[in-house]
Image (cartoon, rainbow, N blue to C red):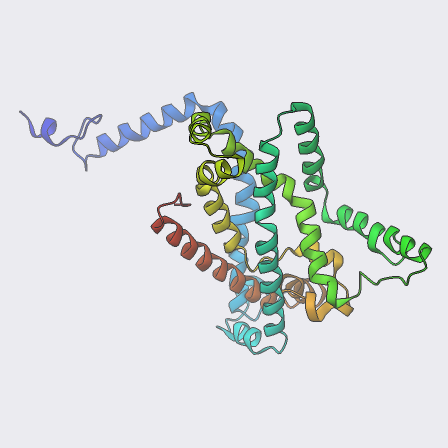
Length: 325
C-alpha cells in the first residue's frame, strides 16, 4: 500500500498538505456553488446589504479614538486614545442618560416581554379560523407603520386637542397634559411600544405552539388536567426554549431603549426622564457635529450589549436550553 493511499483523506487524491488535493477541494467547491448559483443569487442582496450597512461602517469606529477632522479624513486625523471615552464617563449628563436608558428598557422588558406570549396562548385557543386570522391581521398591522405615523396617531388621541382631552372637556373636566408631563412619559413609552409590537412578537410563539404534539394534550386530558394545567404543564414547557432565546436577545439590547419611538415623543420638557443614550448621540453627532464623542458613546453601548448577550447565552446554555451558539 502506497503512502499516498494511506495518508490521503477521504475524497482527495493527495496527502493532507498536498497542493493537488487542496486544488481538487477548491474545484469541487466551485462546482457546487456554480450548480446552485441561482440559489446563491437569492441571498446576494442580503449579503450586499450587510456588507454596505453593517460591516463597512466598522471602519468609522476608529474616529472614537481620534481627534477627527473632516478635511483631514479618518486616516490622517491624529490619535487621541481614550480621550473621548473619558469625556463621556466624566460628563455630568452621562449618569442620567444611562439611568433613563436602562429604566425604559427594563420597563419595556418587564411589561412588554410577557404580552406576546399571553396573546399567542390566547389566540392559540381560538378555533374559529376567520376570527383568528382577523385578529392576527389587526394586531400585526401596527408593526408595519413607522414610528412617525404611529406617534402621529397616538397624538391624535392624547394631544392637547386630541380625542381624550376633547372628551374630558365635554365632561366638564380639565385637560390632562400627556405629551409634556414627566410623570407619565415612561408609561406612555411602554404602553405604545406594546401596542405596536405585541401582535408581531406573537408570530414566533404561534409557530412554536403549532409544533407541540397534540398527543401531549390528549394525555393531559386523560389525566384530568384542565385548560390552565395543560397550558402550564404542556404548552409553556413546549415553547420554553423559544422564550429563553428571545429573552436572551432582548436582554442584549438593554441599552437600546428604542430611538425612533423616544425621538418622536421626546421634547425638552421631558429630558430629565426621557433623554436616552441614542437621543444624546443623535444630538452630538447630527446637530453638534461631535462625531468622535458620539461614536465613542455608540461603541460603549455596543460593547455592553455584546457582553450581555454572551453572558445571557452562557447562562441559558448551562440551564440546558437552546442557545444562540
